[in-house]
Length: 304
Ligand SMILES: [Zn+2]
Image 1 (tube, rainbow, N blue to C red):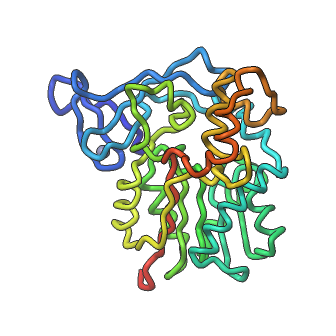
Image 2: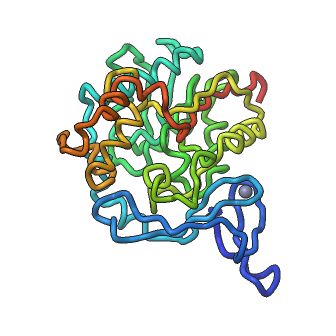
């Protein structure tokens, strides 16, 4: 596994190694870094160091942490397949269809969590959809990784991986020749580490280990022989449904305690939200979404 790590063997000064482009970077003045508070309420009092590779601009969590500890009672475990989640998933499915996904295609949702998107797809008639998640007992079936699929879908997984290039190589193995590989992940280009407090949901510490730039993701995919079919600069949770967009979420979370937990709790309207700005963002925010995420639909070559 290739966690970003301090390498002190090259010379007397410590260096960090980028697990995306292999750059070896001296620690010290000039290195772009930040201490970022967790956006999970339980750990809000803890901060975590991140650094940006000066060569490829990807962002890395600096220190190894006991992730088992932080994933206990992870807020996403509270997500349900309700009307809001379905509206989000409709965005993902629309993108998949535009990329060429058909009802009869086999699909693997890699890192499917509790399987909500899988259940959504099956409810829409995608009978050959499967889900794999190494951390979910229900979906931890290693045999699924021995097959190939006409679509490999992975939303909000790559950034959690200790070794993103190895994960992309696994996706290459899992995709059938000519198959789609769809990756949704935060975009490091959108993050200003000098204003990291404004980006705590994108940085999502300590869970996000490596945040690639869109350019780095595309370069990695092309390095595996994939071609880009389509790409999007906004997350699937930015919908045209009034108030279900990123700008409204940012406004809502800042009107409370700015934690991710809010997304899975009953909606609470307070005085800070009773503004014309909230109404404007609620109605038109989806058209002004910051490019905090990227989704790239790749196609694997026919010959592999
Ligand atoms: Zn790099």
